[in-house]
Amino acid sequence: MINWPARASPCIRPIGAERSAECAAIHATSFAYPWQETDFEQLFVTPGTFADGAIEAKDEYLAGFVLSRVAADEAEILTIAVAPEWRRRGIATSLLKPHLHGLAAIRVNHLFLEVDVENTAARALYANFGFEQVGERKAYYRTAGAGSAAALVMRRDLL
Ligand SMILES: CC(C)(COP(=O)(O)OP(=O)(O)OC[C@H]1O[C@@H](n2cnc3c(N)ncnc32)[C@H](O)[C@@H]1OP(=O)(O)O)[C@@H](O)C(=O)NCCC(=O)NCCS
Image (cartoon, rainbow, N blue to C red; front, side, top):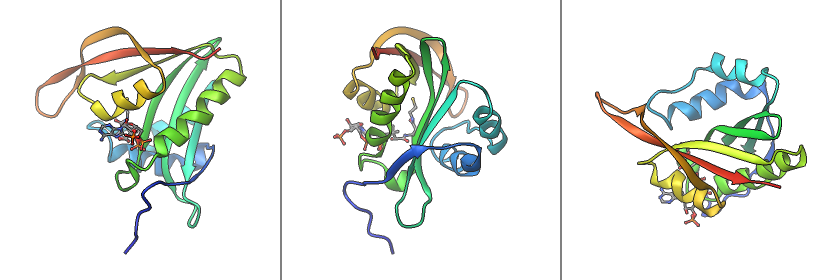
């Protein structure tokens, strides 16, 4: 049995298509409509896509990741997810810090993302990083059953 540490200190480093299967597995535990391994493979080879992974030190497996797409001086965080057993241990925070620094280093100024209005965990995380709401898309996400939820459009300037 694994004793999960209260605060994780994984290695954060850029990841690519070799991690597609692990990204898809984490995504499947995180979202109602998960992306497939092939979706990640395609994203990783799309120019302008940048991803960082949280790599568990002992066994080198992926505990979480963040993936963004850059166009000129703007970028969008397409997805961020942490494996359920690793949540609330600071991994998303550890991922976002270097990811945002990396985007700023390539002169990305305006960073956007969309978040489900009902996703309190992600909204708290983004608030910690200074993202502010700049829009709302009504009935943007399909939820379980026939429901829908609004997406908040968030922005943070990096430079
Ligand atoms: C959102 C998510 C990425 C956060 O990852 P995490 O590694 O658990 O986040 P951290 O441990 O770094 O937490 C950072 C802050 O986020 C907030 N937070 C994280 N989980 C929370 C929860 N369940 N409830 C309330 N706030 C939460 C807190 O402010 C937290 O700071 P604190 O621990 O000092 O209180 C993770 O819950 C996840 O993968 N969720 C499913 C996928 C998802 O919703 N992605 C976002 C899509 S827009």
